[in-house]
Length: 457
Ligand SMILES: Nc1nc2c(ncn2[C@@H]2O[C@H](COP(=O)(O)OP(=O)(O)OP(=O)(O)O)[C@@H](O)[C@H]2O)c(=O)[nH]1
Ligand SMILES: [Mg+2]
Image 1: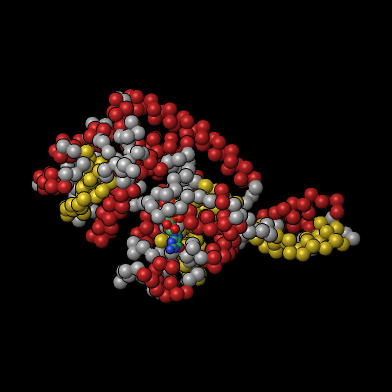
Image 2: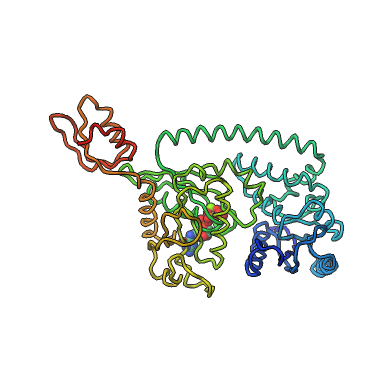
């Protein structure tokens, strides 16, 4: 088997001491590790990391002017093919760096866009990624010249899809035309999606949306529920130990029985500094998140950086105007917590230690003090374990059917349609045929109780 040689890449980051929002040195180091993981996900080989501490990034060069020579030396030493910077570079920074270094230059954003392009499968995801890429590319055509035409890379990379050179030939006006075309096409796809959504809304089933950082275990949870309640392999989604395994939104009906079914959606994971253009482009895919009755926020609890991941997720949810939706916190991968190198600062949602959780999961946790104000419950689980899945379902049902109350109805026989309605939409606890009509003891939605109040005994 012939394998293409991997592109050798140098990763470069600036820790800004003058930027309060930049986080701690440790956060910065973590974001550099993440950049290395992202480059591996793009089938590149990171050969060295270079870091610099500055008050602020340099407007012209991102790094300090003196650092450029050092980067050139490292490029020569490692025979690097490409350098990647840990932030979004401005068009002029990109151009200057390209001129100064003489090899392909990328930034965190273009790397994420490249991964998304490789992974996009559905028509909608492909359109969305192309739109985000073009918007990013348009002001940067000159600076991206080398990155676009570079050889090697993955079969899905910008270059080998032939997209690079072709795109380069496009002048900005043609890019504008393509952007307009993509926007139109996306509107059509969106219409289809709207029709599906309307059909779902008609079913009046509550919708819970899995959200969280990439690789937290969202798809694993969806699959566990599908296995448990459906047992249909074709309803499973792709799950894998990689960043951005999922790019599309999938909705599955989880049939727990007794008129307690709900819909569960799985969607793209979030990451720190997710390019804003990408969030914008994925807004329609993420519509399910905005329309959800409950957000199930999945956290990889075995990751020492789980708090930061939570913060990023909560910020992205707020960007999506979904910050008001009740959120169930799910601390996942509890089975891995014990083996992790513990962070001494690790403080738990309920004040205990992850090792304790390891011994005790699955369990409900005391209400979290962290994150946003609308957290409605927290639990520690392992998506790989059956009892955990049972507890998760119990908690989801508690939330989405929390508005359900029990009432005793007496429905006259000439109102058979109402009996049929309750049979379909409520959980029937008792049923009896009396001379005056059907007596039903049922747990049903608050709204139905209001509507059928005249039949309540
Ligand atoms: N040990 C252990 N592994 C888990 C658990 N949950 C998920 N995983 C693994 O974590 C990896 C990522 O899981 P996914 O379900 O693909 O993660 P995701 O949140 O959907 O990730 P993206 O689609 O990239 O956003 C897979 O290798 C899973 O097998 C868990 O509770 N315990
Ligand atoms: Mg996934």
